Length: 369
Ligand SMILES: *Cc1c(COP(=O)(O)O)cnc(C)c1O
Image 1 (cartoon, rainbow, N blue to C red):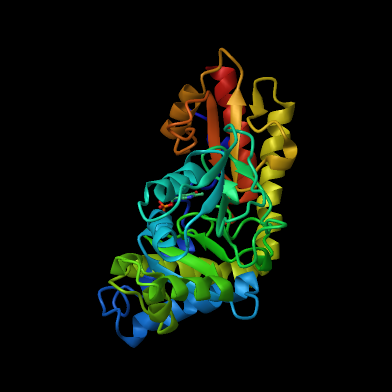
Image 2 (cartoon, rainbow, N blue to C red; image 1 turned 90 degrees about the horizontal axis):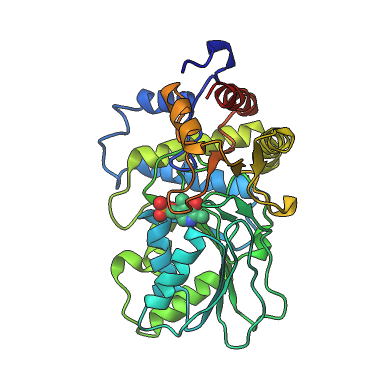
């Protein structure tokens, strides 16, 4: 099936991660092909890019006094292990409502040196929340559950023990959803989502309490693999470096996207833009006779990752396949969720007009299937 050219989006990338990288950022990367790529990460050219990324992120989020931007290799999945080794003293509590939240809870459950965590579990498409519990020193929740398209506010747990840390998995939320960082101690993400770069890096915005916790655990004598040692990452980040070799292109592209978003108006601009895209998609689905938002509670619907169910008899997998044949890629649902749905990224790099075009293309495909 050929979708008429006039209906197609200008850019057909709607993947939730790795996500659309803006062509202008790739051009900028090509401009530094000789001066940056293939040069030492211990020298000025690369350290300047790490500094550009860290200061750009600091400006973008309006980093509160005393908070620091820390980076390390391995992406969010590595950061979960960093948190297990370097941030959780003994007992954690998690709210999980999808694949990603559950993975962090499992990593901590499997760590033999930590107590058994409490897990509040919600069904996919709904949310679960944290609640004060005596003896819990670390609380963890995703701000946006990328597998289902559910987003929750970033908030400290009222009544938690003094000094308990709040860890927010903002991998797909950071840069596209509003946040008051004073409500978080560890706001962590990876740059292949709203930061429109490639994977392999983790970025954590740490409060003074989180930094102090990492130092406390390290000095307690716990065995911490060097790669997962947050204090080592903090020391390296302060020098605009990483423990081992980072992907230079990932750092450069993330810095490009951060500068671009800052130039557009920063986080406020990005939050308005994802809200605009989400409004287009959800209001289309609500009016559609065949599509409906998977997340039934409008208050939980994510503005960065939208999941759309299709009525019985309409095969979402077939829609995704036809879209793909027409250059519109990665609208398939999260592989383990197993729903008759499409999942669509609405990150800041994606043009709202392209989201609009996507809805016309889906309508066309459904009509002609
Ligand atoms: C993508 C994603 C991850 C995994 O990130 P990696 O960098 O691939 O490890 C974790 N959590 C959330 C919420 C995500 O969206």
